[in-house]
Length: 186
Image (cartoon, rainbow, N blue to C red; front, side, top):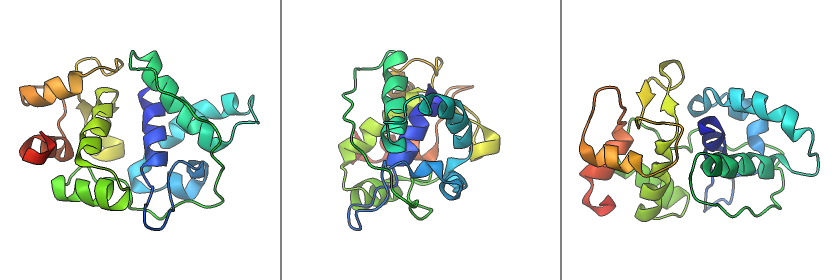
């Protein structure tokens, strides 16, 4: 489930409000987007999903990848997420470098989420809560470990762990710590 949520986010997180490019339009199916540095390991999710997707040719890749994220949240105990089909697959991927860089702080987060995507500080905090699922793998991101004690349950433990300070065995990325250090995020 964590990989599916990551796939859905990495597909959507490339959106640029000014150029109206990027976003959840199925372009992760292209090797060029899979090879973007931030997408290391996404190919695992795609390999798992492809035999399932082939059974439902009526669904676009765009809808299928977002549906995988919706299901990931729901089966791990998260809220019911409304799913609205109808996305069309785009013919080419966005340029590399649109996803947030985990090594950077609040200014960078705002550059990506607010300026690029047209979202708000509140959205940054809410979307960061997705880190309640999954973990980082050193060979993919340079970081190692889960954010929470139970990375297969979607709940608010990411925020509890973040507010509780650093703990042995749990990960806090610089981008996570920015949520604490910048008063506008609190």
